[in-house]
Image 1: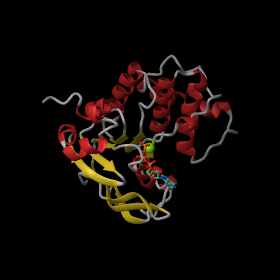
Image 2: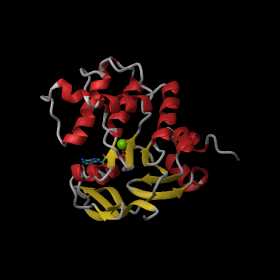
Image 3: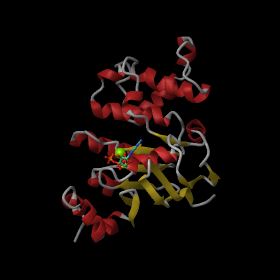
Length: 258
Ligand SMILES: Nc1ncnc2c1ncn2[C@@H]1O[C@H](COP(=O)(O)OP(=O)(O)OP(=O)(O)O)[C@@H](O)[C@H]1O
Ligand SMILES: [Mg+2]
């Protein structure tokens, strides 16, 4: 088994000649938490869209777990265990917390959404669903509808529905965006927990979260890799500081011992 679980070579995405992602060669180590950071518009989400095959690259290749996935479809990539956390909108607000996870489990087993299955059939997923909810700290919230959940808990539910896919590698796009301090701490602990035995690729603007979680960080600016390394080394990199200047220059060095 190779030490590298995900590798891109010369990954490029152009939109009408505009280079959103340019020649990105990324190596993600198996079992690591890898951060992808950079200013707004750097190409982070586009990278995720390329990795999960929501977008076709203009050039370049993607290898996942020793297999060239460049030409695969999103569902095929997900089936291989490379799964992106759903956007909040993909959590069904009128279903209960438990039902949301059940549907995700059923989808994983059955391959498609099938709301017409009888309740008793769905119930066989209950035990597993409850276990997943416990994993993300949502025990006690089962009977609330997803729409009633506070924001931070909704993100936890989103992670539970992603875990239902049994990912080997999880992609998280700004899991703490818009959260209160308390929720941020809870999500950080949760990511740490779900990262055990998995690989996580994380896009995150909160650099304190990045420094607390990530083993390796890749910094993107204008679609290109600017720097890579552990938090200490990228935070001290003058080019990285310059790229963040004006916006987050103060945050990037925050928490780094002199
Ligand atoms: N479908 C598209 N068509 C045209 N341009 C796009 C498209 N998607 C993204 N872009 C452009 O590509 C660049 C990178 O966007 P992307 O969303 O990947 O950035 P990001 O790093 O995720 O930014 P943010 O931190 O704000 O989420 C931006 O300039 C964006 O406007
Ligand atoms: Mg983005």
